[in-house]
Amino acid sequence: MNDIPVLDDWLVHRGRFVNLVFMLQSGEREWLIHIRDGAIERIQRGPFVMPRWTFRLAAGSDAWSKHYAATPTPGYHDLMAMCKFQHLRIEGDQHGFMCNLLYFKDLIKALSGVVQ
Image (cartoon, rainbow, N blue to C red; front, top):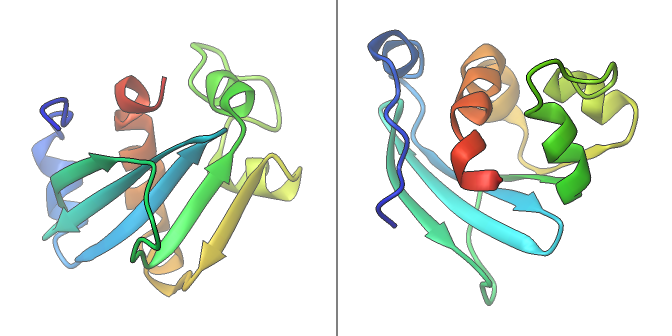
């Protein structure tokens, strides 16, 4: 996929120890995002048959739209808030996600053009 967003240098530096594949799901649409040394190496658009991923972030398309709004609605302003209010499901091995939570919060914000 050619629409890999350009990440700022600080974000890549902050995620320099992140090497994994995660799935981002918006309604029925899904993407596999390959991260190597904090940079997005590749984005694959689904549907997939038995994909391999470390963790998955799954929410409805309306939830992602509210999250990516210029002024997000309370409960949609943050990934953990979305999880708390059951707008977002985090599945799989969450260790890499939780150890690099601030990195992934900013990375998901940078992926707004891909998800919407």
